[in-house]
Length: 278
Ligand SMILES: NC(=O)c1ccc[n+]([C@@H]2O[C@H](COP(=O)([O-])OP(=O)(O)OC[C@H]3O[C@@H](n4cnc5c(N)ncnc54)[C@H](OP(=O)(O)O)[C@@H]3O)[C@@H](O)[C@H]2O)c1
Image 1: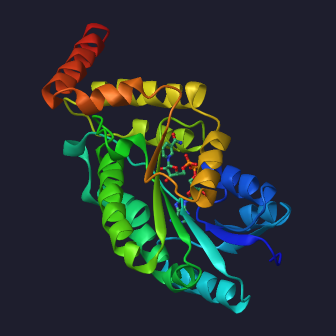
Image 2: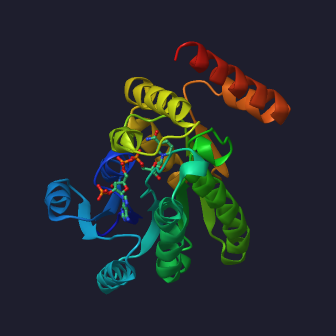
């Protein structure tokens, strides 16, 4: 890794926000270790200047330990960890196999804990920064995205506790809350719509799922917009505790101030509209 550049580890750097951030940070003065899970993605990242691919599956302890020893042996100071790797499981909660909920938390929460705990000694030494990629789903829970929302709400709580603990180490932790971003995560969601289970929730879940995928792909932000904010979170002397990233934050501000029952009424209205068009 290049001598004067600060070094950052990004999990899930094969696509979407992780990939864009690896490229953005490496173009803006950082050296980056980009976590990948397969050979094809490894080879792609090899070609990006100042990015070193590293095998890292956040659910497999051995890959995390191997990555840790590899980085430690390079004698590079690790300044930042971007916990970006994530998956989105969805579907009506009452139709959901417990296994889906487990998989969701294995990556989006337990995976983050495994990686953060393992790399903590290096980050503590550099008084570095931890960036958590949360979501608008970390404070607003939408119907039929229960597993994903639950994992991001959990991440918000985990991060608030950790940030306060890290005050003792003079380290900073920043939560990033993107709204819709146009990444491959939306295509991966299509499979979920093909589920066999039929219930009273199915037509509503299908409609809202299709709508979300369509909107995510067509109106989602460019992942580079998120990368810019991650850069800010890593470089500003006093970064904000949370960065909400969306073209307009009005909807979110309303959600936060409206009584929750009113928000439920809006959801109910949406269900009625779906019913009328079934
Ligand atoms: N897209 C959005 O609208 C949006 C909005 C808010 C927040 N986010 C969050 O942003 C983060 C990145 O998502 P994205 O939208 O960029 O999606 P993406 O393109 O699907 O990227 C997800 C990344 O996570 C990796 N990953 C998945 N499981 C992993 C595991 N077990 N171990 C290590 N890496 C794993 C994937 O690697 P493989 O290629 O090997 O599967 C991929 O590199 C996620 O935390 C997501 O929740 C996304």
